[in-house]
Image (cartoon, rainbow, N blue to C red; front, side, top):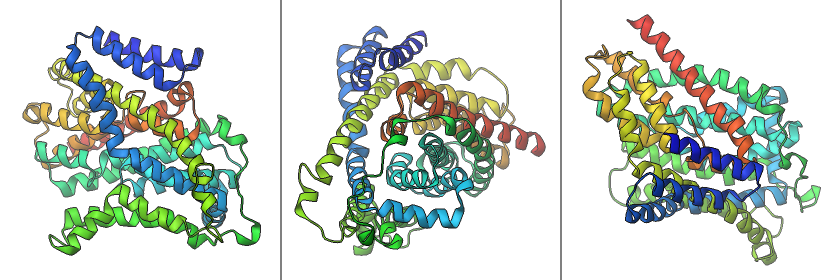
Length: 439
């Protein structure tokens, strides 16, 4: 644990005080942690390969597609057209709440990383149009995405935890929705009144519109590159759990089109329709696509290095050590929260934290007085709440949020990391109150 705290301190000092690029700091600190923690050299090297390759294999192409779509939305004025329409519907004063709720809904079927990448161009345009600061709306969006991702099935973590514990999935969904929505209220308050006061370099940028006012696309047309991928991914998620098409051509088509990278490729196809006239220079190395790929390269490298750090922590056995020390405690419904929070903070993955916590605590639930159907459902939600506390340098989502918004690591900890603590602790309090009332 001391080595982990030292590693985090080195990451913050190296990037904030000495302005070293996050990729280099993360990579060196991850190697240092692995070697100093006593891991075999072979496992250290394997962790580098698995961490970097694993995270980029899952979201690398999604990031690339999302950044290119964002470039077309920005350069054509499509993002601004869409922002004007959305703001007319929700009003400028409710922007933070709207982004939190949009993220909440989108993240039920869509992973947080993909959801943030898809919605970032819209959020950026809305923030500019409303005259707000991006830090506040970006944190509201990120926390909305995390709230449902960690506590509301059909995301993999809550479903796996419910299966391991033997909880009723319907009760988990109801309890998870109630708890997560209540916990989102103080989280959005934090995003609006604290994160919303912080300036980022991106706030000073002017929108890179290269189309004339007369050729800016209609809002409905600008919605397609964002809306179509979301709908395709949602369709696949519904089919996975409700099984409209079990096999055959229909099932294959739904599975193919609903895979995030293919869904975003379809979104890119609609993005190519946004310019009044698509010119080959837009697709060249020096054009919109080339510029977008240069931006994506930095995000990819930093996210990959974060994956290395997270995998190194997982393979070091730190999670097992923490769970062994905590499972002897007897504090009722708060124990699932604390175990999951410790595991999340230590190794970075919310899903790993949820599955590990559920596996450790499943045989202990009767002794903790958590044997009723409602108590089991609340235990799953408590595990989900713990898996939010906290997202920091060993979590790929931390790097997606900070790199796409232009936050440095220090501001990332002050805004995103602290925001996840507010969300997770709020959810834990709601779970504890519900457990006391129930029983």
